[in-house]
Image (tube, rainbow over all chains, first blue to last red; front, side, top):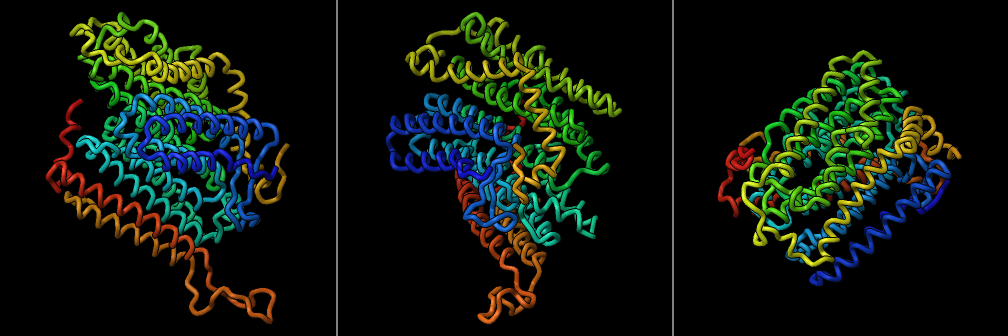
Length: 505
Length: 98
């Protein structure tokens, strides 16, 4: 269906950001406007998802320049899932930030940039034009640069240098790949590219371009040799910012990979092997990195890297069931990782530190909160019937069926290390006797007003419930992931929708 | 870009970015002296013409890289002000803490 509605969530975030600019110094107004904006955007995104479910592909051709000549926005099953995930996380983090981000950061435009970041994310999930994807990526990274450095502490600056350098490098590689791709096909529309790439004589050049895309997106999603910027920068900003980075930014790279490697470059044997080898290395290095960390935030950073490996492996296996696993895992991972990073913020509020050796006894002091946190942590491990369990079965089964035994070993190793790291975190932070008793002086959380406590705890609880729902109602989400995987594995559906106007339903 | 000095890192990034832009220009194909304008007497293009798309792409890319690079310059200046060093290796102290 042709509809302008696709642009609504993007525009809403843009206008929220612009309105926020008018309240530059008014912190209270900024908080309220941002939460309202996030609420409306959440409903618009949900509406977009339901409309995509109902009508099949939604398409808008900007300025009525028909594809393949103009820029188009397409909402298919994968895009709409990513949009809803973005909406859930941005709403949760938005509410959480009203209290967690200190006033001086808000005064320097935290919420403004936050909304521009979310706008960029939504844009990159919805665009159907490869150069436009690049532009949205730039919107996202420049916003993330500002968020990362906002506050200007020494630690943040040091993390930011690595982050900025690697992300600029990734953009340049991505741009180079687009340039070559345009040179050999003469088009930028993704559906049109998918058609024209088959007619290219120079197959070697196509493979090189595919590898360039892989490297560019790989840096963004933190895969094996290119992940070092992530653990050395994600623990530096405040937890709300880390939550949106850890939940969504790396997944944006995975989304772009899923899109380009199912639509434009169907991976051949060589590419599949590259994906699988990189995935195994990513899982192992990420897992090894997580073992000995004392700071919770660093531990989670390495687990992010480790679990990116699962997603890459799923794309590398390139069977329908593996892609189902990837999509299900994406849904689970975005929710849980954002949640855990917000939780580190609450723990820091309570005990002034996130160093595991200096933490302890949290279960005794805050039993109810601990249960909520436990749901998030155990979802990440994938204890049945929580949400991490279901996609992992797909991954294990598919790697066994396609006889990738090394990959299967890496999956099991990474899962065990995740189990170990989370179990250690649980016993150190929640069960162990605290090295020093919790006094009112340390506990800044207890001193907060009831409204502020709710604003911190409600998003965490909500995300825990979402991951509980993902696990307990897995049948529905499995079907959803399966429909998405069928769409991705049959790119002619997408091409038909964009170029010929057959929108499916 | 592999140098330890931050300023040289920045120069590397600048060069690389400009290189990518020129690459787009070249792979898009160069056609000299043939603007993509249709003659009044004709309805469609009759001969080869210069493709305007790569120029549009480069223009966008230049604007974006200008923003990114100016951000990077300010960031490096700020890092230099807070750490008092131009050496990238001196920034890794915090990574040793596990």
